[in-house]
Length: 91
Image (tube, one colour):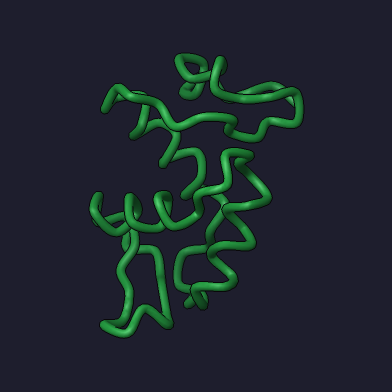
């Protein structure tokens, strides 16, 4: 499967299964990785933390779904309840 043109600048961060293998250090590439991962979540659906982790773990290999969840929240791509039990896309 070919990466979309938008994600070509981060192709070096993917393995042959199109899983993210490392977290970029540059902000612009981080945003592209987050955009790529965000597309794996449906708008209008609420997810548990466990579901978020399961989906993220299917699409990255560096074993840090908490980093990715926090980044979604920091970039305001997702919101969550105060207790962290429910998450949803905001964009």
